[in-house]
Length: 268
Image (tube, rainbow, N blue to C red):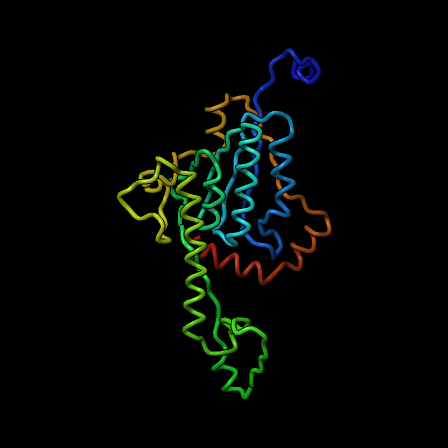
């Protein structure tokens, strides 16, 4: 009978849910980083192949680039609206900062009781090396056309005007983040607490403040919702044999360290 369903259109098929895995840091660089260029074709295929009853986002990300988060989230929303397909997000260890931006692109968000959710804020971090250079007799020479071209140069002392300008830029990005979450979670967010301080919540607390809709794991929830025979069709960025081999043997040390540091911020 299963084989007959493939060529007899009048027989009802079991529902299919497309599952897109979004795991890792969000950015344009680093092996395995999540970005719109690599995920775009994957997302398009997930929404377009067959007629999925829903698209599920399997999220485990500490965040990263606000622009790439916005691009990925916007693509998901565009396709969901065009094709009238519901989107469900399932948080694993963490959906924080840009990771929560992606989760908020879904119509409903589910998490584990111990999932870390939130961190709706913006951060910029770096190092100052001018004192180290001075101690070692190294002189920094910079020539610019345009007074802001050397803003926040790590090899020069910080300037108050540079810090003020950076904070202005971060605040603008924060406003964009807040608008995205407020629009996507309209009518669900608590008015009793400020949810946009960069704070984080675990699963049940995240439900109380409106950042998450319920406790649930991907497969059991989808089976309960669409039936025991629901088919999960998984999508992700595929790597060639050489790419997988080189990644395993040589690695991308810088990206790996940065990603590890980001996850460690949430005790993971």
